[in-house]
Image (cartoon, rainbow, N blue to C red; front, side):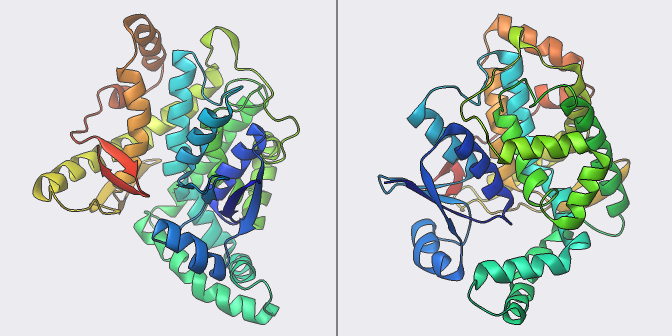
Length: 362
């Protein structure tokens, strides 16, 4: 009996999980997350309306793409999306954080400022697949307003939009140069970093029509990578580059993460530390205030989510647990990436864990 995957083509994180499941050769059946599915399956199991959700053949419920991936990495074995070597492993983990937690900014901007009417139709078709087109549009507008409303709190504003677009186009150019030489980030096998990037770069920035036109025009090699990721031809195939090689072409991408995301995450960690000290017995909220962020020299404000700290904790814990020789090799790599000291010296007082579908103190 196959595993059951509840998601949707519109969903950023469904795209991440689906691409992995297809490459890993997982036997699963996908179900569209209609209103009825949310009501009868997702909310009763998880406690809130969120996708993707995986119900395993043993009736275990998995929510959060990283946990879904890690479950099947352990369950199936075989070739892994986690490199064995220290530099590649750290870079892959960092790229997952960058894609999952930062590229949501351009993803949401382009979706709601370039594709709004099209997205309303998609939302309506998902929620009520049997309804008429007019009814679907009405339902989609109602549903979509909630998601569009996230844009300001994500830092998307008239002030920041020009910088968000300039930064995204520069990132596309960097990735396009890399994917002109390599099938994936670290060779001919996708890594956990590729899966972090595919969420925003597929569902919003490739599949949404206006965004997709921009990607195909400005970065055809990125579009080709997206197609390799989501149309898996050979599951469990490919190799990481030999000798723990991290291509020089990835350094500008890593430097962008260190310049844009890492300082914001340090501010988030500081806000969370103060909140946690004042609220030691309170359930962790989705945000602990607003924090400044800077893209292409323009500063705005966005919500400070503790969940992003849990994601960053993965590469931090890996980095800090390295043996001396491996750590020296990683430090040599980081020394060549502008701004990487913000990562190596990152401070976070309270460890975090994700249990029973929510963030808790570790």
